[in-house]
Every structure is written in C-alpha cells, then in structure tokens.
Image (cartoon, rainbow, N blue to C red; front, side):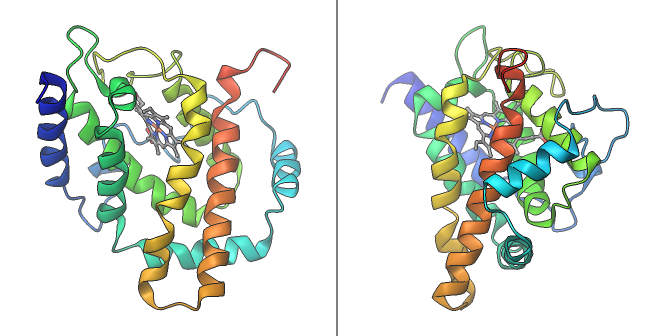
Length: 220
Ligand code: HEM
C-alpha cells in the first residue's frame, strides 16, 4: 500500500468515528457562519435568484419535497457523509484539496471540521428559505472553495484553491448518492423521485451561486 493510500485509509477510519450531536448548531461547528450579519453581501440579487429558480423549474412543490427530504435524512446524515467522504478519500485527485500544502498528507483536522459544517449544510439545504441571509451564506461557501477564502476559517495549512471543474462534476455524486437514503423510510417511489429531483435542483442552484468567484467579472 502506498503512503498516500495508507494515509487515506487512516483518514477514513478517523472520519467515520466522528459523529455529530443531533443538536448540532453553530457552536458545535467551528467556522459555520450561516445567519451572521457581517458576511459579505452576495453579488447575486434576490431577483436574480428568482430567475435562476424559474430556469431550474424549481417550484413550491420542490420546497415541499425538500422539507420531506429533510425529515427523511435527519437521522441518516452521518451515513450520507460516510459515503461522500469515502468517495473523496478513495480518490487522490479529490482528497488533494484537503491535503497539507507542505507535505501532501491529508489534514484530518481540516477534514473533520469541514465534515461538521457539511452535516449542517444537508439540514440547511432541505430547510432553505432563499432569503438574503441564505444568499449571503451561499456566496460565503463559494468563497470558501475559491482561493479568495479557502482555508481561512479553519486556519488550515492546505492547498489554496479547488478547481472549478470539480465543483460542477460533484453535482452528480452529491445528488445520486442521496437517492437510496431518500428511499429508506418507505415513501412511494414517485415521492422518492420528487424528493430526489428537488434535492438535485437545490444542489445545482447552490453550485451555480458558489461559482460566482470563479467567473470573470460581468460574465456570471
Ligand atoms: C456540488 C459540489 C459541492 C458541494 C455540495 C460541497 C459542499 C461543501 C460544504 C457544505 C462545505 C462547508 C461549507 C461551510 O463552510 O459552511 C464545503 C467546504 C469544502 N469543500 Fe465542498 N462542496 C462541493 C464541491 C467540492 C469539491 C469538488 C471539493 C474538492 C474535493 C470540495 C472540497 C471542499 C473543501 C476543501 C472545503 C473546505 C473549504 C474551506 O477551507 O473553508 N468541495 N463544501
């Protein structure tokens, strides 16, 4: 086993052992800033957001099914994160973005801190109300993937920037891997399909908003 693979295996074991308390909130997730009023304002306006939702065919019915997905996923979040982190950990080109710049080893503390915020993000995605505060945190999450803000909140000595192509590519695994979890609570297949469609649209919508820092001024 290569040194990198051994590092990844060790990382996976450590990460699977980290469970988030059911009552997790800002105080349990360092760096989580959803709701802070001193974040930079999103350059995307609420009316831009409305047009994006329209373009994605995102309706009130999707909101209803996202709320249902939130209930269905609420006690499965750690299992979902195990799948996502397993995927990242098994792919050196993805775990790279969590590695220490100095020696290329996975930064387990950084991985664990981001995992806690990721858990809150699942909840927030299913509960989203698409107001200015939500929009501003989307901009913040975009900044955190880009060199203008990556590593900042965790003071992580990691690589500087996540390449845009992987943000878009991630939409599929982040959507498809959730489907079996949506089907775990005995809902009718057509209801599972609607939850899945709503979840997928919500992930696409957020990824578009997160793309802003990557796109040349005036082209978004
Ligand atoms: C659809 C695509 C993606 C989703 C839904 C997603 C989701 C998230 C979430 C929820 C956070 C935490 C946000 C917060 O701080 O509150 C985060 C941070 C992070 N994500 Fe992603 N992500 C995506 C793409 C990627 C890709 C492709 C990578 C590369 C492997 C990646 C690596 C990271 C890293 C390193 C952080 C920590 C950034 C920091 O330093 O603050 N993400 N992501």
